Picture 1 (tube, rainbow, N blue to C red):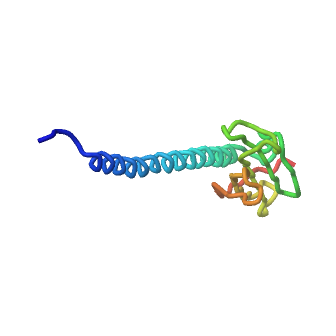
Picture 2 (picture 1 turned 180 degrees about the vertical axis):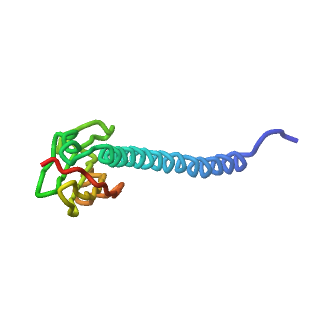
Length: 147
């Protein structure tokens, strides 16, 4: 009697190993994609929360927008934009992968101050045809009038 494996047994074991390896390899690709999305969500949430917390720590709208370089100021409102690259470092609008947009709107008040609503939105701008919102946070605070 001969010892060893037949050709059919070797071919079947290689085919089984190839099928199982394909599923394992696919799990690695899915895991990598999910990790990248989770990383982006984590950074986006941190940036949005930081903008809200900064807003809450300020006494006036002017003090808050003073922390940002790019902003538009209207009648009792402000719109702030900040851009980030793939590594969540500061970037220009042209080279940005992500954008933070903060909208502050006054809701009325008296001589002592005004109630402001703030909305902090982080978007994924890598696909210009389909810009996706990653995080959208809102809050309100009563700010002093300094005019």
